[in-house]
Structure formats: structure tokens, C-alpha cells
Length: 524
Image 1 (cartoon, one colour):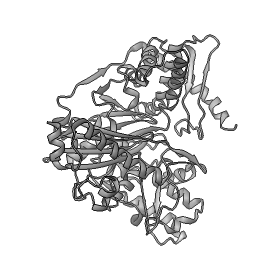
Image 2 (cartoon, rainbow, N blue to C red):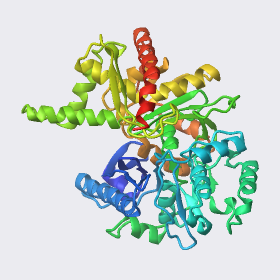
Image 3 (cartoon, helix red, strand yellow):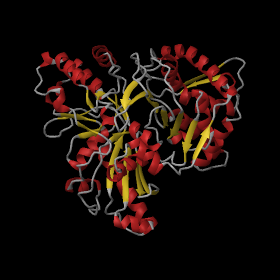
Image 4 (tube, one colour):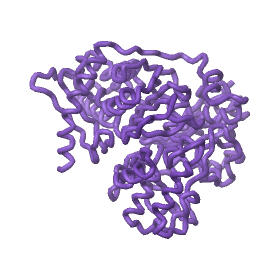
């Protein structure tokens, strides 16, 4: 059955460029995953910026597609040549600037950079709207404030997903959710009043471009009209076998694909994506009353307003300690595969004390704007009477992965009285069944659901957006997902535990106090 669907093109392809892995996900017309591919990569810290080179980007997307094709041929003994629709996703935010000849003017600046504080602060005040440091407009304005010489030559700016989409289609466009991480959105387009304010702000620079000209056009989930070009097909598929003319849906960011992958696009539903970074999103019933630097206002891929708490750090430090314990196991003559190692350490952490026995950890491999940390340093401390054992230590590291998110969410829930019926978790942190899910439920004191597709993440969500473009029949995105995709899907629901909620709150008290030491490390 799968073989026939692949050869006839009754499939949908989503590709997402994540922080450490590029993943391709091929689904059939019942929305089940039938093949996948991947490519490992890492960002670099060069000349004061977190970046990926253009060579990295090109090799990565081609390598991921090649792996998908190889896996399909190995599994089904057929060559992958066509699909019904394709969608591209990537890490939200960041800054890619090109001149009129499509030359990259400065190395790609990713979401991870915290170098735009001055620009973000001034734009937030000008717009009376929180503009985070990660957003493309913050990077652009900071470059202007820095008098970076290439700015005068800009013809187009975009995000990583927008760039790959352009390579494959020749169209400079973004889905509205991704666009909302470039510049504030109102009524499914860039806010006209804020565009005018920005134009006035930089008027004295006398650039040959306007902000309206250099931003990609905005599209909404389900919009049609863009196809894979002949050049795009040849670029991504070095075998030369992928047909061109395949419909391509608007490119989206990893936040949008996370919402889709967890069926969290309706009001009062939220999702938490946990991988290299962690972010929580809640679809709002009404606009926020106040502006908070810790809370971004973005949109779903369908354009509904969403409150977003984005934290730069999540699993990186956890992964480092799992690797460390794996090295010890190997030295002791007990080598084990990565999945088993994660399972042992995570599940044992549930045996730890609810407050981690007085142990507190910080996973700051990079800065965290929510807690005012510019650079970040991994750190842990314990009290003189702490209970130092493996379960408590790993539990503290797991708590650390969610601590900054908890601090940001407190603002949304306590000050704005925002309501969430449930949060849905997805991403690598949830691969070990029941562990991170329970800890997150305790941290947020809210039900947390994890679906059987949780580890598929954004690539699957992007494939669903590609399918929605062709298969919707007048339904909104939320209605279509509810009726056609998730109605019969297995869901594991975890309720917060009273002792766990109290324990996490105790941990957060110590965590907040210890931030002073983290801030002192900034001066080292």
C-alpha cells in the first residue's frame, strides 16, 4: 500500500531545519508517517554571532533529502520522484540579508543571538509592542544602529525557511506565523502603522530601499499558487529525479509547525516545543492588556494571535550530561545505545525528591532574555544539606530545562489571567515516555498531553500544512486538524501532582535566588 502511494504521489512532504537536525517527513493521504530522512548539523559561534554557513545550509537540505530518498528505496524498493505537495519549515526569527543579485551580505544570524538589545528596546518603545531580540526587524535595526556598511545594499531579508522556499520556488514569501517573527502582524499582514513608524525612524539614512520592499510577502495556511521550480528540483535532488511543478505551501517557522503537530491552533490550547530551545505558546481568547518583554505575540499559521514564551536553552546541557554518563558506562564495560541511556537516566530521575533534594541547575549554554542573562554559563549548586544522588541531579537538570519557561509563563497566567485548557508537548525532550511530560505538568500546574506523533515534531506538522493546502474543503485549519487528522489519534494525558507542583515551586525559588551568581559570571 505505501509503495503504491509513493509511486503515485499520494503523499505530502514536510522538511524542517532545526537547530541540530534537519528532518524530512513523508506522510500518506491518511497523514501517517511512511518515511523520514535526516541530517545532523550544528551552529557555530563566529565573530560574535551564532550562525550556519551557506555551505552548511545547502549541504544540509540536500543531505536530508538524499537520506529520505535512500530510506524510501531501502524500505520500499522504489525511487522517490513525486509527491502531492511540499512544505518547508525552519528555526523562526534570525536574519538573512541579500542584495539585488542574491548575494548574502552578512553571515546568517540565528535566533540564538542576543546582540540586538538596543534595537529591540527602541523598537518596542516605538511600536508599544514587544519586539524580541530574535526578530528579523531587531537584527535589521541593530545593523543600522551599528552602521554596518552592507545595509545600504539590502534588497531582500528573510528567515531560514523563507530562504530555502525561495531556492525551491523563486518566490519570496512566508506563512503568516513565520512572518510574525520578522515584524508585527495585524490582520494577516505586516502592521501598517508600525511599518510607517519604522520608515520615519530610518528616514534620515536615505536608503534606496523601503521596509515594505525588502520584507517577504505574507501568506496564510491553505494559500495556493506556488510550485517547485525546475531549478529548485535540481537543487534539492542531486539524483535529478524529482519532478518540478509540485505545489508548495507557504513556508512556516518551527513555532507554527509545532502548533499544527500538536493540534494546538484553537483558542485556549497551548503547546510546548522542547529541543535545543524550549518555547510555550498559547492561543489567546483576547489581546493582552499590557506589553511584556518576556512574552512575544505571534500568530498561528492561520493568523490567530498567540502568546509565546521563548527560551534559548533546553536540552543542550541535559544531552551533555547524558553523554558524560555514557562515557562512564563505556569505561565500566557497559556500553549501551543512546535511547536506552536516556531512558535509564530520565526514568530514574522520577525517583528523586520533588524539590531535587536541594540541587539547582542552570542550562544556560547561551543567553536568556527572560532572566536577563546575556551570555549564559552552565552552572549548578547545592545546599549544604542537599541530598546528592543521581536521581536528584538528573531531576534538577530536567527541571532546569523547563525553569525559564515556567518563569515566563507565570507572567502570562498570573498577570494576564490567560486561560489554558491544556498544553501539548512535543519534541525530543518527550521521547522518554511519561518523564518530561509529568515534570512539565507539575511546572505549569496544567494538564499536559503528548500524542503518539510527539517525536515527529515540526517536519510532520509541515507535511500536514502541505496536505491542508490541497485537502481543505472550506474548513479552518483548526477544524480540519480536529476532524481529519487528530480525531482518532492516541493521546496520553498527564495531570499535575500536588507534591510535584509544590516541589517545582520550591526549586524555582532557589533558581531565582541563584540567578545572582549567573549574572556575576557575565563579568568573567
